[in-house]
Length: 205
Image 1 (cartoon, rainbow, N blue to C red):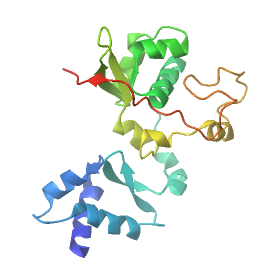
Image 2 (cartoon, rainbow, N blue to C red):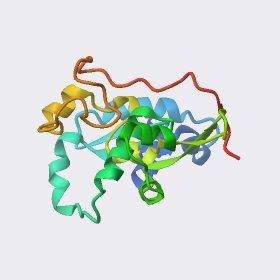
Image 3 (cartoon, helix red, strand yellow):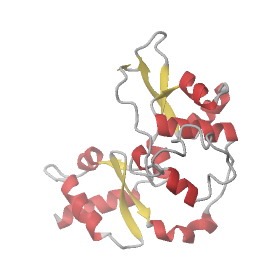
Image 4 (tube, one colour):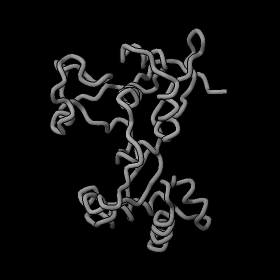
């Protein structure tokens, strides 16, 4: 198992993108248990400057969250998202899978094609399954790249109202329009909107 840990460590270290257990085992000798090796490896990295993080259904080696400030000098800001793009991204993240019509209903204004195209180009949003309703509209969901960028294991780790207020993101915003798609002030501060699991979907062609 120690040797398998070394193999997993080497693959994660050399990979720029998160790697699934299936991909790990495909690279390792037959009979290896990458999942078990990950358990031991992750424990061994606890408290270190680099940690083993789960990103969706994959795994990646990342800088410990409390040491992120050390990397600030190496961070280059290439572009800023427009207010429309930020609101659209927030709605998709908290309400995924969401159709364009649902996004427009929450925002109260139409969503330009360029806004969604920008989020897709950034690889933070992708097409989801078609909803089996009249017109079979496509849905939008956040990507693994979005989760990785913000250090989230899955979309359910998104902050609630309490965390957003603590970060100063809700200051000077009159209720109830805090951030499109978030719970209203009279709801539980720690609650994150549940995703709609009751809809019927069809696979994208």
